[in-house]
Amino acid sequence: MKLSPSLLSADFARLYDEARAVEPLADRFHWDVMDGHFVPNLTFGPPVVNALRKRLVLPFDVHLMIDRPLDYALRFDVRADDSIIFHVETTDDPRSVIRSVARIPARVGVTLRPGTPLERLVPFLEEVSLVLVMSVEPGFGGQAFHPDSIGRIRALRDAIGARPIEIAVDGGIHPGNVRSVVDAGADIIVVGSAIFGEPDPLAAATALREAAG
Ligand code: DX5
Ligand code: ZN
Image (cartoon, rainbow, N blue to C red; front, top):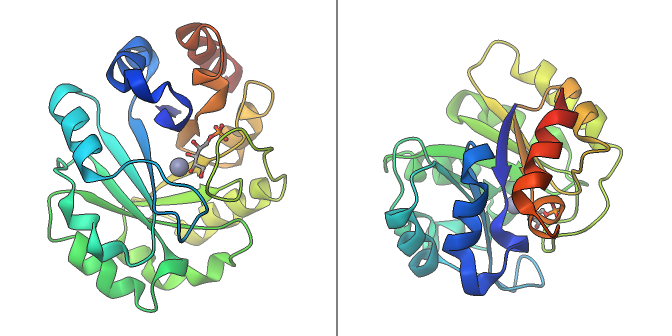
């Protein structure tokens, strides 16, 4: 299991320090980019993520919760082991977004809201490196895990078969349910409030790793 702390629940005045505090137990960092249109919340964009990219070492997963993803997807100074992830609901032509993003040195990921059928992704599995299963409605941290997500992770694992695609799961994960998410087939666990909402984020990350088995 790889742990990807989501800085959405960190103290935005101290993003770098918050990331560094959990770095010993993290494999990647997850950045939630929101536009106030696709989701009813605003966070940060390329200037903030790029400033942190220069100073942090671990790979980044950039989760775009924005309409017209190509307006901004290529403005992130990403590295080859970083990911740019966009929502299939934000475009009529996911394949052309995938191909455009694939021209920069980053992994391409696709994601979808909890209510969007997985079938929407299946035609594109040949061309992506990562699928992010949203286990809450995108937009906010601290929501409850949708129990249906376990079945969706299993179904996606079956659909992926032997292709070299990682499954990340995002939303509502805590020490009490992380094991079931990993057992269902998740490779990357994204966790916001159960790390940065806790008084000791490093201890919280340790607890998550132990609970994941
Ligand atoms: C929600 C974001 C998540 C969020 C998860 O739109 O995509 O990455 O940070 O936060 P928790 O772990 O608190 O559900
Ligand atoms: Zn996210």
